[in-house]
Length: 118
View 1 (tube, rainbow, N blue to C red):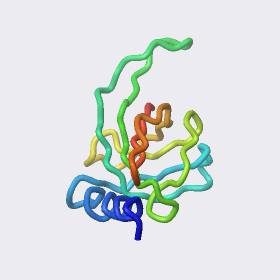
View 2 (cartoon, rainbow, N blue to C red; view 1 turned 90 degrees about the horizontal axis):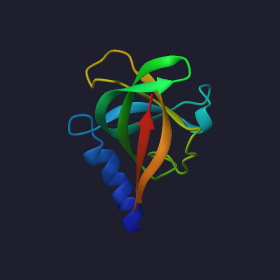
View 3 (cartoon, rainbow, N blue to C red; view 1 turned 180 degrees about the vertical axis):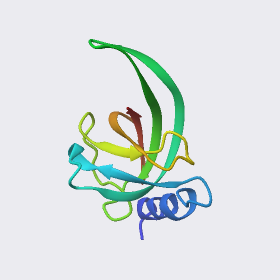
View 4 (tube, rainbow, N blue to C red; view 1 turned 90 degrees about the vertical axis):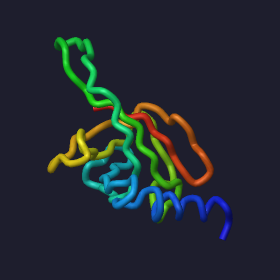
């Protein structure tokens, strides 16, 4: 097993463990809501911010998510601007909110760090 494989496995089983830092999210490659993938992730929630849009003002969740860079345990490729995820605004919420991947913050060995916004 390579170091990259071990880091991806640890990301999922240790850091991404729901009883530690992680939570299960639904990831939608290419934004295809008909092709969901359940993955463990660490979600770091930022503030809900006010955005000025053409239709007026709206609020949006900003966050970063850490997901294993692995086809089985996480996501092998990221399509910035198209990929989406279902993430809870607050960790204890019953229902999630669909967010869009707007930035690849880092690609560490075995781990994607992605910036998302509602």
